[in-house]
Amino acid sequence: MFYALHSVFVFMFGTIFGSFFNVCIYRLPLEESVVAPPSHCPKCNHPIRWYDNIPILSFIFLRAKCRDCGTKISIRYPVIELITGLGFLWMWIIYGLSVQAFVGVFLFSCLLIATVVDIDHQIIPDEVSLGGLVVGLILSFIFPAIHAQQIWWKGGVQGLVGALAGGGIIYITGVVGDFVFKKESMGGGDVKLLAMIGSIVGWQNVLLVFFLAPVLAVPLGLYLKFVKHEEVLPFGPFISVAGWIAFLWGEPIIYWYLNGMRFS
Ligand SMILES: [Zn+2]
Image (tube, rainbow, N blue to C red):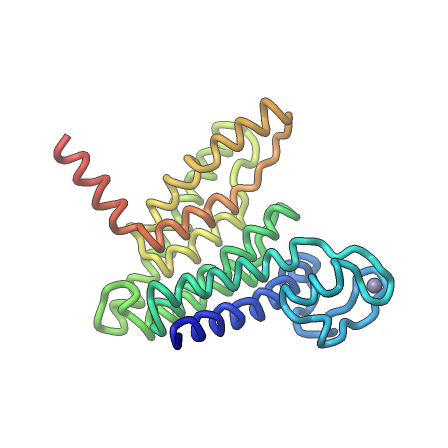
């Protein structure tokens, strides 16, 4: 009973953050402040009343329409809130109230914002990638346990090595790709995003992300190219999904892969 109550609370707490992430997703690519002015309808500019700004529920009560001008509200607002709430709940269920859960929630949030903004605008905001990298490095020093270390500076070094490994390998790939294909193949946003992920998951896991992301991207890339005849495929969402997989299951995947090779 208590557990169920806690779960509901954690979920609701997450949806409030999701509501803020909606603001970030909308405003960061436009270089607007995420704190001021308060949320308003993009069409009629009327400020949104507090009781119309309740995550998920307000969308349902308003029947997906602005109270003032009747403009349709996109389904993605409650969807982002729902996903964020579930992400918080997920971390709380597997890690409890712990540093690992906090780090997981932080990474999940960064990857979610990066994914949606990259799909919309083909960019990844520096606030998420570089800002996330700084936070990731600070967390590595404060909580060396996230890199399976006990001493603060060893955790920090692991975070740094992870960031350099992630950013470095994709940067070098980009340079080689530009040389081979004679056109820009990898965006700078991807470099910074992978560096951020590396600072949190460490160098072994970030290499897994580097190899896993293209595997995830290829099927959709081929589909878009040959069925929809679209060339542009943002890579950030695949890096993000691979980063999340590596955060959750990196160690068993790497163990399975290395042992599979050894015994086959
Ligand atoms: Zn309106």
